[in-house]
Length: 145
Length: 155
Length: 264
Image 1 (cartoon, rainbow over the protein chains, first blue to last red):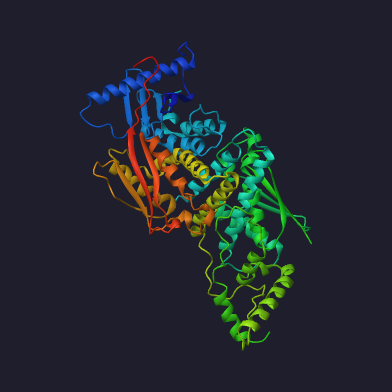
Image 2: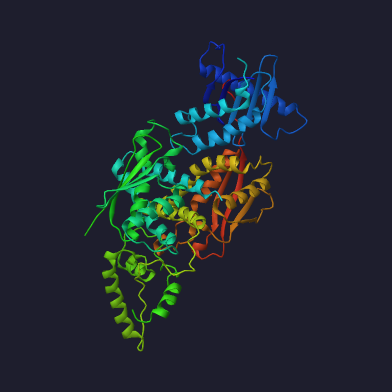
C-alpha cells in the first residue's frame, strides 16, 4: 500500500496545503493550476453525487477508485476538504484523514496564532506533524519496496 | 470540560487585539498584555490559595508557582527552577503551552515574546498578592521552550 | 499566646471564609493593591504569609482592635491568624478543576477592563468584544467538531442542541433552549448562571456595556464555519438585574461552498 499525495482546501476552494510522499510523475503545470483543477473536480463529483445518490452523504467521506489509484475526500462540517491519493489497496484512510484533521489540523492550525485561517499553511511544525502521522499509518508502513 | 481551549483562544485574541493597528508600539502592546496578566494572576492566586497551606518562605512560594499555579494554568509543571538565593529565580518551561503549537525551533521566533507577556504579568500578579514585589521577564531562543526570570525587589 | 485552645478552632473557621471581594468588579482604573485590598487580605490572611509583612499586619490589627473598642464594648478576644505553620487539618485544597474554569473568567475580566480603558465609548467595547468572539468562534468550532464529533446540522433545532452541548463542554453550564418564534428561524439560549460574569458587578458608568458580548460573537463565528449565517445578541443580562441571561439567535441564510473559478 502507498500514500501518494495530499491536498487541503478551505471553504473558499483555496489550497491551504499540499504534501506528497510518493509521486513518480509531476503534472507539468504549476501547483496552483493543479490545485484549481483538483478542487474543480472534487466540487463537480460532489455535487453530481449529491444529485444522483439515493442516500445522504452524511459522513463527509467519499472515495472513488480507478484501476491505478484511489482518491479519498474527507470534508469536515466546517468545509475543510482533505484530498488524499493512494494506491488502490490502501486501507484505513478514512480514519487516517480523521486523525490528520483532529490531531494535526485542529492542534497546529486552529490553535496556532501564526496560522491565519484563510491563508496557505506555512507552519513547519504543522508539516512535520502531518508527515509523522502519515508515515506512522499502516497504509504508509506496508508500502512495497 | 474543555475550558482550556477557550482560555487559549481568548489569550490568542488578546494578543492579536493589542497588536492591531499601526499606531501602537511593541512596548505599549506588551505592557497592556502584562497588565492583563497581572490583574488575572492577582485574582487567581487569591482563589487558588484560599484553602491551601501556608508558605514557609519565598522559595516555598516559588515552588508553589512552578507546581500548582503552572498546572492550573498551563496543565504541566515548570521543568526546572533555579535561584541564586539572592532574590533571582529562573523558571524553565521546556514546552510552554502558548508556544507548543506554534513552532518547534526558530520559526516565528520574533513573535514568540508576544505570547509570553501575559504570563510575565500573571506571575508578577500572583507574587504581588502573596506579598512579593518583583520584576518578571521572559526569554525564548528555541520554541517551544522558554524561561521566566523573577527578580525580587527588596526593601 | 493566650486562648490557644479556642483560637485554633476559630481560625480554622475564619480562614475558609472568602476573601472580601476585590476579585472582579470591572473598574477601568488601577488594579494594583491599595489599602482596601490589603486590608481585605489581612482579614483573609493572604498578606501575612511572609515574615516581612507581619509587622504591617500587626499594625492593621491594632487599628482594627481600636475600632472595635470604640464600636462594641466588652470585646475580650481578637483572633489574629499570623502563624506560618501549616493550616489546621480538615481544610480541603482548592479544586484545581474549578479554578481552571475561573482562570478563563478572570482572564476575560482583565480583557474587558483593558477594552474599557482603550475605548471611550462602551458601544465600541461591545463591538470589539463581538468581533473577538467571532474570531474565537471560527477556531473553536474546529475544536468542537474534533472533540465532540457532533455530526452535521440538518436544521436549526440540531444547531440549537449543539450550541447547548458546546456551552456544557466549554463553560460547564447547561443553558435551556426555547422561545422559538412561529417561523422556527429564531430561538433563545437561556443561562441561569453566566460563568463569565461570576465575579462581576457593573459600575454605574458601564451600564451600556454588554459584558458577555464575546459569547454572541463566538456563536456567530462558529455557525458561519458550518455554513450558517446567524445573528446573535443579548436580550437579557443578570448583570443588569434581569432574572436570567438570554441570547437570541436568528438564522439568516445558508452559506454554500465556493464555486470553482471559471464556472458558474
